[in-house]
Image: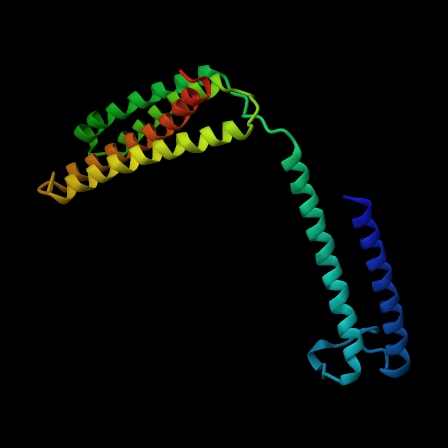
Length: 213
């Protein structure tokens, strides 16, 4: 917070304090101490003599809000000035993508118990992206990095939406239309794999753009 802002806050605070003192004296002398002494708000009836104290109260509230806004602005501006680094993560977390193979167990659970939930484990294939994120672990997120990150995410989303369109189109033309369960399985597998692919491509393409490989 700059010295100018501090002086401004102090000046405004002193002004609010003086106004409160003047308003309190006015209320005690000319308004029977209303808004100074305890009041039963259920029986309150507005009087024009209350206006000075109400205005002063509103000004004090605005002063408090102003201080909160200034504090938040200074906190966020300080954070924005600090150098930002990508999160620190080991490339070995990429092995978590192996859990994606559990999705194939869905064929067994569907055959034995009629359960299709395990197909959702195909999402874990997206965890292979942690390998490439680990390769870019704790590096400076400068403007070029941010631009490459946006570019990689946009490209990944484009591919994901195109694949999702294909899946929806296949369903629209009647694929598995005679078997609702197989339709649900197809959609669950497709959406899970598309999600995993988008997650993987976001980090993979970012790695390619950063390393220019």
